[in-house]
Length: 241
Ligand code: G3P
Ligand code: MG
Image 1 (cartoon, rainbow, N blue to C red):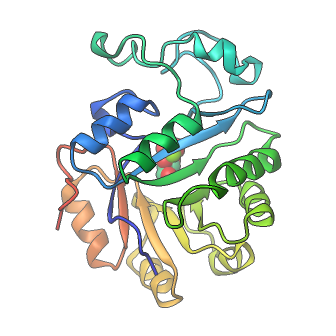
Image 2: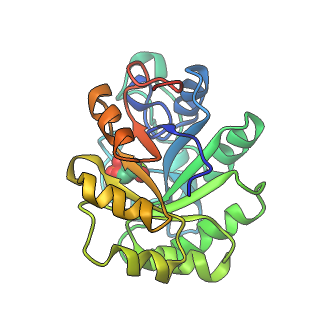
Image 3: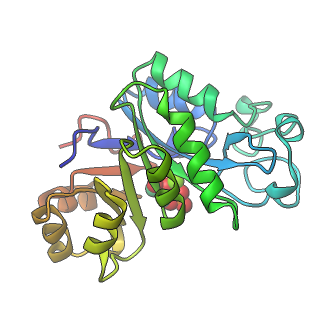
């Protein structure tokens, strides 16, 4: 069962703003989205930041592993200039800043726990703890890492958790049960109609990422998918049918 938004802005603002920044969240909100997905990583100093990659250079200025950064050093980096001059100087936000923005604007969060390799347990625990004080129903935690989700479950058993997968694995039901997860988050192109209906029959929520083609979105909803995450905020709008 899925009691969350149906259309979710991927990494905050999809293709319309630099990913995983406050500017991206503002963009999603400005386009009428009521739900956003973003990636949260823990730095070795324990700081939680919005970050997708394990290396600097693609979207955040600098080079080398994110694992070598502290919150202070990362705060000096530019997370917007790669996207366009308009966003130059946009910082890497802390999770606390992003969460505060979302709560203030009643923007529901799909917080993807994106651990640096080897930090799955600590990251899952810290993210879940950071979410524990947020209003009920404001957050759905998700991760490709079952270790991170188990750690989140241990410290925050009442947190809503979703398991991210690429193709749906044969033991999906068992994995969801073990994690006491509420939803499966499947790669859209790898999902079949039969899998979608099995997940729904079993009573779980089903979210698909990343859906940028309206025709594909329609097909997925016809299959019973509950929600999609999109980069194309301009093509797949919050009222998409
Ligand atoms: O949560 C859906 C999606 O964000 C998972 O993949 O690599 O874009 O974080 P990725
Ligand atoms: Mg993500």
